[in-house]
Amino acid sequence: MRARVFGLAGFQSFTAADSLSAVLDTSSGPVFGGGGGMLFGRNLFVDVSVSRFAAEGSRVFVTDTGEVIDLGIPTQVTMMPMDVSIGWRFVGAPKLGPTGKPRFRPVPFAGGGFGLQNYEETSEFASSSDDSSESHGSYHVLGGVELPFSRRLGLSADVLYRWVPDAIGSGGVSAYYDETDLGGAQVRVRLLFTF
Image 1: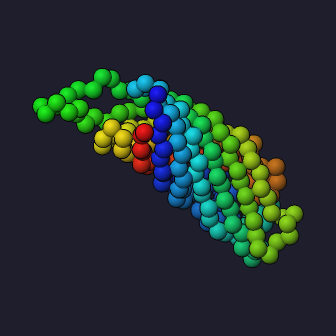
Image 2: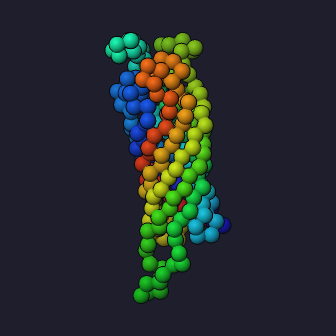
Image 3: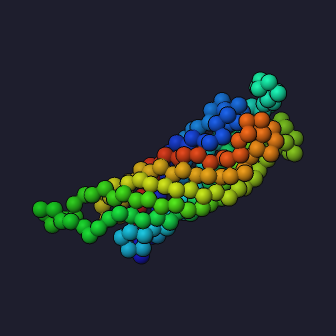
């Protein structure tokens, strides 16, 4: 059993594209974060990661005809998912090169898990009742490949798809667009250090 830590950078694309585009003029953007986990033998892993997406926009009102009216109130939207992932690394026994050292081999992996996503929407000039801060349960699947540079240091690239059902849609912009899921696809690159 070995522990590992990692930093991550990536790009998030959200399922609720119309709702977020109305407020932020975009439904995607960069994410940053980190985490840690455990390797059990060569194959089984358990990771915990936290990432953060933040963007600025403006509060809006959508008319019955679908016209988006900018209310002129700057707003900041922040989403911070925490994911617990359990997965399998498809790696066999190491093969030695001509010098007797293990050969460099990419390691594919796949998994899934659950988590919690915090959603915050704040405006400097709005009343506190207009701001929101909520947490919602989530679940996800992921797959990718690790590139081990040494016994301790490596890099991984993966795609994680997250579902956050019933997080929005009870009113406002998301109700008009009939969007309820705040999940989506996250493409990530992680720098791994294994102890």
